[in-house]
Length: 325
Image (tube, rainbow, N blue to C red; front, side, top):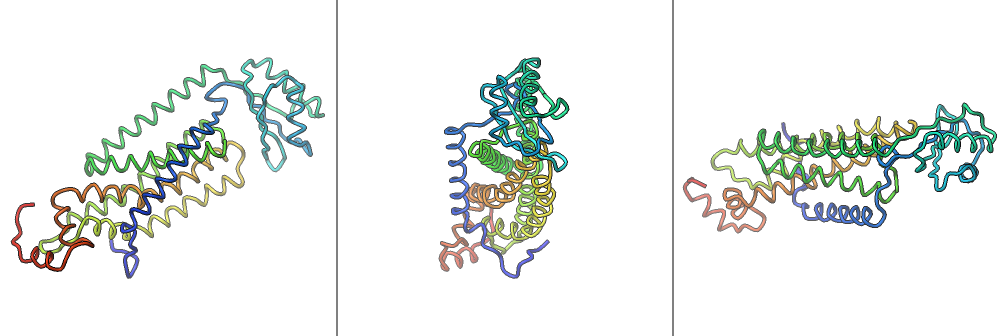
């Protein structure tokens, strides 16, 4: 495979700028997580979800007032659309099914809605704790398996930089959820696990090209690891962009046209796929190149043939006999 471009795009040579941008995004994400915190759905903390559908011209204010009058202390109300009909998705901390149904019935009655215009789902705190524990275990096992696979298939340094890129994607995605105060639901967790696979795919494609190109260097051909990294990214860059675009089309469709459940999944996927594409060439590959260049072989080639090398040094290296690194 060769680059689609007549001249290489100097991506790796802007590694400091790319890493600085990612660093700022990570800091913003951490600030959001600390200052605003994450909002968890009832599946994690327990509570009630009431889905009102076909509510006509009723406003959010009217719905909230009706729920408060019915006994709900601090309900979260958001609009929804089901089969083209206006509705509302209500979340509250009520964990008693009987009480939740009474509140929903009273609110519907005061708004002139029938008993068939809403559905009530109540989840206890024990079930939420199980979901939280299972989600944390899934993430931990996924990270360990990624490190093991990439270490065996390629090398340990690649596995660590790939995981750093994954954590970068997940942390910033969670930061977006914190800043927007969008609820974390099991659908979001499923999307985050999917993001891990997507981000790893792009990263491994680039690492594979870098690994193959480094192995194919012949005697007398002097290329630094930064040069190999940049060339390898250029080889797969168009493929990465095409994959991203085709993956985003159904995600955007779900976000614009799907119901509340699909939108939870689609929003996380949209943010994660964009970050996964970015981190593959702006985080994972630059970090690997920086780490690899510290190895004796690549450090010598960087000193002789890198941007700061002198013509005299290059001539001396060319005249020297090939020996052990």
